[in-house]
Length: 354
Image (cartoon, rainbow, N blue to C red; front, side, top):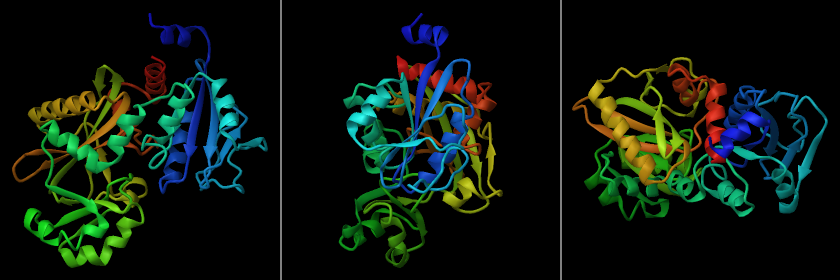
């Protein structure tokens, strides 16, 4: 029996939940944290919530018995818990001392600082265990241009794309029109939750709407559209990995954007996905190759497209800290696969403590 497994049996594990942060995905992080905190097995874990404000101040919420009561942006005016015990941690020493008294950190922060390797690098520097992939793997998966370079190296099929700085669009206009066919999607290279992504039919639409993308990042990806199924593959494990049932996003609109992910009732999540068995096998193989080659650990959601015209499969991107809201496909896929969220979280903590 592993030491971490003995720990889980012999004492309550003290888990810090980090959430909020400075990215545009701040509010989704809070909603994910609410679901996570309310799903932990209280017989095994003690949960300690730490909110990071939009101005990057850390709040210690000194109550494990209270539940989060808001999903609004966290700032110095926000009362996050049903409590008046909020305490700021304003120095690295304060944060280190606080986290060092606990067993492990669950960095439930989406987007910049949460998924880009920064928080992981900080936790590594103070020797604190945490859930999820290490700083190097997180950095690669957060930057779609780096991720796509890895996919190319691994010979995993992906849709045609170009990566560039926004300042190069005019200079590379000929490359765009020669190498890609419209319609295309223009995406921030570093970002999540489909924020800042635009669908364009021609170069004029790129010039007209590029400001939506650059609000998130000036490094961009221009990617040829695939008409077909959007597929999500949920993975957990260190070394030996497990797959949940594959999920499919049924969206009557052309694009599964931020609003449709979190607010639109027209979107349907099909678990399991309605795809052929040989496609399931290929997706599992591609996902396994990517997960292992990029040295991911703990958890990930790996997204694919299936082209309806020719049945070709294309890998899209990797999310190293998937959403954990009640509408998020990652926990729902595991629930449909026979693993409830409480037991899923126990597994993830165990992986982080290995």
